[in-house]
Length: 190
Ligand code: HEC
Image (tube, rainbow, N blue to C red):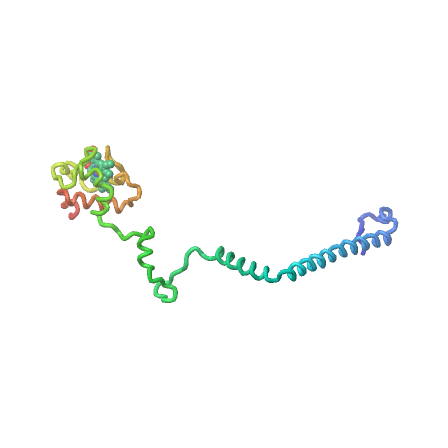
Protein backbone atom coordinates (compact mmCIF):
# COMPACT_ATOMS: atom_id res chain seq x y z
CA UNK A 1 0.00 0.00 0.00
CA UNK A 2 2.20 2.79 -1.28
CA UNK A 3 0.48 6.03 -0.41
CA UNK A 4 3.49 8.17 -1.23
CA UNK A 5 3.99 8.01 -4.96
CA UNK A 6 5.98 11.19 -5.17
CA UNK A 7 6.77 12.61 -8.58
CA UNK A 8 10.25 13.32 -7.40
CA UNK A 9 12.86 10.87 -8.52
CA UNK A 10 14.33 10.96 -5.07
CA UNK A 11 11.05 10.41 -3.27
CA UNK A 12 12.71 8.17 -0.76
CA UNK A 13 14.40 11.19 0.71
CA UNK A 14 10.98 12.42 2.00
CA UNK A 15 10.15 9.07 3.50
CA UNK A 16 13.31 7.32 4.29
CA UNK A 17 11.45 4.31 5.70
CA UNK A 18 8.54 3.57 3.34
CA UNK A 19 7.73 0.27 5.00
CA UNK A 20 7.48 1.89 8.38
CA UNK A 21 5.25 4.64 6.96
CA UNK A 22 2.88 2.12 5.38
CA UNK A 23 2.72 0.23 8.59
CA UNK A 24 1.78 3.38 10.47
CA UNK A 25 -0.93 4.19 7.96
CA UNK A 26 -2.33 0.68 8.21
CA UNK A 27 -2.40 0.83 12.00
CA UNK A 28 -4.29 4.12 11.92
CA UNK A 29 -6.70 2.74 9.33
CA UNK A 30 -7.44 -0.31 11.48
CA UNK A 31 -7.96 1.85 14.53
CA UNK A 32 -10.47 4.15 12.79
CA UNK A 33 -12.23 1.18 11.24
CA UNK A 34 -12.43 -0.48 14.65
CA UNK A 35 -13.92 2.61 16.26
CA UNK A 36 -16.57 2.91 13.52
CA UNK A 37 -17.48 -0.76 13.83
CA UNK A 38 -17.73 -0.43 17.60
CA UNK A 39 -20.03 2.58 17.21
CA UNK A 40 -22.25 0.71 14.77
CA UNK A 41 -22.54 -2.29 17.03
CA UNK A 42 -23.08 -0.04 20.04
CA UNK A 43 -25.93 1.90 18.47
CA UNK A 44 -27.56 -1.32 17.29
CA UNK A 45 -27.31 -2.66 20.83
CA UNK A 46 -28.83 0.51 22.32
CA UNK A 47 -31.67 0.51 19.78
CA UNK A 48 -32.44 -3.14 20.50
CA UNK A 49 -32.40 -2.50 24.23
CA UNK A 50 -34.86 0.41 23.91
CA UNK A 51 -37.16 -1.57 21.60
CA UNK A 52 -37.19 -4.56 23.95
CA UNK A 53 -37.89 -2.32 26.89
CA UNK A 54 -41.35 -1.31 25.53
CA UNK A 55 -42.09 -2.88 22.16
CA UNK A 56 -45.71 -1.68 22.22
CA UNK A 57 -44.66 1.95 22.22
CA UNK A 58 -43.11 1.53 18.83
CA UNK A 59 -46.15 -0.11 17.28
CA UNK A 60 -48.53 2.47 18.68
CA UNK A 61 -46.31 5.37 17.71
CA UNK A 62 -45.82 3.86 14.30
CA UNK A 63 -49.53 3.57 13.64
CA UNK A 64 -50.17 7.16 14.69
CA UNK A 65 -47.22 8.39 12.68
CA UNK A 66 -48.47 6.50 9.66
CA UNK A 67 -51.90 8.08 9.89
CA UNK A 68 -50.39 11.55 10.26
CA UNK A 69 -48.12 10.98 7.27
CA UNK A 70 -51.05 9.65 5.26
CA UNK A 71 -52.99 12.79 6.09
CA UNK A 72 -50.11 15.06 5.12
CA UNK A 73 -49.57 13.22 1.87
CA UNK A 74 -53.27 13.09 1.00
CA UNK A 75 -54.16 15.18 -2.06
CA UNK A 76 -56.16 18.34 -1.44
CA UNK A 77 -58.93 17.19 -3.73
CA UNK A 78 -60.01 13.99 -5.40
CA UNK A 79 -60.08 13.64 -9.13
CA UNK A 80 -63.65 13.03 -10.23
CA UNK A 81 -63.91 11.32 -13.55
CA UNK A 82 -67.14 12.10 -15.35
CA UNK A 83 -69.25 9.02 -15.94
CA UNK A 84 -67.18 6.93 -13.55
CA UNK A 85 -69.64 5.91 -10.86
CA UNK A 86 -66.85 4.70 -8.60
CA UNK A 87 -65.41 8.18 -8.20
CA UNK A 88 -68.37 10.40 -8.92
CA UNK A 89 -69.87 12.18 -5.94
CA UNK A 90 -73.62 12.55 -5.81
CA UNK A 91 -73.15 16.21 -4.92
CA UNK A 92 -70.61 16.96 -7.64
CA UNK A 93 -72.84 19.23 -9.66
CA UNK A 94 -74.21 21.51 -6.90
CA UNK A 95 -70.74 21.79 -5.31
CA UNK A 96 -69.21 22.86 -8.60
CA UNK A 97 -72.00 25.37 -9.15
CA UNK A 98 -71.56 27.03 -5.77
CA UNK A 99 -67.76 26.99 -5.67
CA UNK A 100 -66.68 29.93 -7.79
CA UNK A 101 -68.34 28.62 -10.90
CA UNK A 102 -71.70 30.35 -10.82
CA UNK A 103 -74.35 29.67 -13.36
CA UNK A 104 -74.24 32.42 -15.97
CA UNK A 105 -76.38 35.36 -14.92
CA UNK A 106 -78.76 37.19 -17.18
CA UNK A 107 -78.19 40.77 -18.25
CA UNK A 108 -81.05 41.79 -15.95
CA UNK A 109 -79.41 40.14 -12.95
CA UNK A 110 -76.04 41.72 -13.71
CA UNK A 111 -77.73 45.11 -14.14
CA UNK A 112 -79.55 44.71 -10.80
CA UNK A 113 -76.31 43.69 -9.10
CA UNK A 114 -74.20 46.64 -10.30
CA UNK A 115 -75.68 49.18 -12.71
CA UNK A 116 -78.91 49.72 -10.76
CA UNK A 117 -76.94 51.54 -8.05
CA UNK A 118 -76.97 54.62 -10.29
CA UNK A 119 -79.15 53.84 -13.28
CA UNK A 120 -82.27 53.05 -11.20
CA UNK A 121 -82.38 56.33 -9.29
CA UNK A 122 -80.39 58.56 -11.61
CA UNK A 123 -77.61 58.99 -9.05
CA UNK A 124 -74.70 61.20 -10.20
CA UNK A 125 -76.83 62.19 -13.19
CA UNK A 126 -76.96 58.68 -14.67
CA UNK A 127 -79.71 58.21 -17.26
CA UNK A 128 -82.50 56.25 -15.57
CA UNK A 129 -83.47 52.88 -16.98
CA UNK A 130 -86.80 53.02 -18.84
CA UNK A 131 -86.58 56.80 -19.29
CA UNK A 132 -86.49 57.18 -23.07
CA UNK A 133 -86.07 60.94 -22.93
CA UNK A 134 -82.99 60.71 -20.74
CA UNK A 135 -81.56 57.91 -22.81
CA UNK A 136 -82.20 59.42 -26.26
CA UNK A 137 -79.05 61.57 -26.39
CA UNK A 138 -76.94 58.64 -25.16
CA UNK A 139 -78.47 56.16 -27.60
CA UNK A 140 -77.76 58.62 -30.43
CA UNK A 141 -74.01 57.93 -29.95
CA UNK A 142 -74.46 54.40 -31.24
CA UNK A 143 -73.86 51.02 -29.64
CA UNK A 144 -70.09 50.96 -30.14
CA UNK A 145 -69.59 54.18 -28.16
CA UNK A 146 -71.95 53.08 -25.38
CA UNK A 147 -70.11 49.76 -25.09
CA UNK A 148 -66.78 51.54 -24.97
CA UNK A 149 -68.00 53.92 -22.24
CA UNK A 150 -69.57 51.09 -20.22
CA UNK A 151 -66.30 49.13 -20.37
CA UNK A 152 -63.82 51.96 -19.94
CA UNK A 153 -65.79 54.68 -18.19
CA UNK A 154 -67.05 58.10 -19.27
CA UNK A 155 -67.32 61.25 -17.14
CA UNK A 156 -69.08 60.16 -13.90
CA UNK A 157 -69.79 56.71 -15.35
CA UNK A 158 -67.13 54.37 -13.91
CA UNK A 159 -65.51 51.61 -16.00
CA UNK A 160 -67.40 48.31 -15.60
CA UNK A 161 -69.91 50.24 -13.50
CA UNK A 162 -67.20 50.34 -10.82
CA UNK A 163 -67.37 46.57 -10.42
CA UNK A 164 -64.06 45.01 -11.55
CA UNK A 165 -65.46 41.54 -10.83
CA UNK A 166 -67.64 41.80 -13.93
CA UNK A 167 -66.18 40.43 -17.13
CA UNK A 168 -66.39 42.52 -20.30
CA UNK A 169 -69.09 40.17 -21.59
CA UNK A 170 -71.15 40.64 -18.42
CA UNK A 171 -70.91 44.45 -18.69
CA UNK A 172 -72.12 44.25 -22.29
CA UNK A 173 -74.98 41.95 -21.26
CA UNK A 174 -76.08 44.44 -18.61
CA UNK A 175 -75.74 47.31 -21.07
CA UNK A 176 -77.88 45.51 -23.63
CA UNK A 177 -80.52 44.83 -21.02
CA UNK A 178 -80.54 48.47 -19.89
CA UNK A 179 -80.82 50.00 -23.35
CA UNK A 180 -83.39 47.41 -24.45
CA UNK A 181 -85.54 48.75 -21.58
CA UNK A 182 -84.87 52.37 -22.46
CA UNK A 183 -85.86 52.68 -26.08
CA UNK A 184 -82.60 51.37 -27.50
CA UNK A 185 -83.73 47.92 -28.65
CA UNK A 186 -83.32 49.00 -32.25
CA UNK A 187 -79.55 49.35 -31.65
CA UNK A 188 -79.35 45.69 -30.67
CA UNK A 189 -81.21 44.24 -33.64
CA UNK A 190 -79.67 45.81 -36.67
C1 HEC B 1 -71.58 54.84 -9.82
C2 HEC B 1 -72.73 55.10 -10.64
C3 HEC B 1 -72.88 54.30 -11.90
C4 HEC B 1 -72.94 52.94 -12.03
C5 HEC B 1 -72.81 51.89 -10.92
C6 HEC B 1 -73.13 52.67 -13.42
N1 HEC B 1 -73.20 53.81 -14.13
FE1 HEC B 1 -73.46 54.00 -16.11
N2 HEC B 1 -73.49 56.01 -15.93
C7 HEC B 1 -73.33 56.71 -14.77
C8 HEC B 1 -73.42 58.13 -15.04
C9 HEC B 1 -73.31 59.23 -14.01
C10 HEC B 1 -73.63 58.24 -16.40
C11 HEC B 1 -73.79 59.53 -17.21
C12 HEC B 1 -72.47 59.89 -17.84
C13 HEC B 1 -72.59 61.15 -18.66
O1 HEC B 1 -73.08 61.04 -19.78
O2 HEC B 1 -72.26 62.20 -18.13
C14 HEC B 1 -73.66 56.90 -16.94
C15 HEC B 1 -73.83 56.63 -18.26
C16 HEC B 1 -73.84 55.36 -18.80
C17 HEC B 1 -73.94 55.08 -20.18
C18 HEC B 1 -74.04 56.07 -21.31
C19 HEC B 1 -72.64 56.46 -21.70
C20 HEC B 1 -72.62 57.47 -22.83
O3 HEC B 1 -71.59 57.53 -23.53
O4 HEC B 1 -73.61 58.21 -23.01
C21 HEC B 1 -73.92 53.73 -20.31
C22 HEC B 1 -73.96 52.94 -21.60
C23 HEC B 1 -73.80 53.18 -18.99
N3 HEC B 1 -73.74 54.20 -18.08
C24 HEC B 1 -73.74 51.84 -18.72
C25 HEC B 1 -73.63 51.33 -17.44
C26 HEC B 1 -73.61 49.92 -17.16
C27 HEC B 1 -73.74 48.83 -18.21
C28 HEC B 1 -73.48 49.79 -15.83
C29 HEC B 1 -73.37 48.50 -15.04
C30 HEC B 1 -72.38 47.54 -15.48
C31 HEC B 1 -73.39 51.11 -15.28
N4 HEC B 1 -73.50 52.01 -16.28
C32 HEC B 1 -73.23 51.39 -13.94
C33 HEC B 1 -73.13 56.19 -13.52
C34 HEC B 1 -73.07 54.84 -13.22
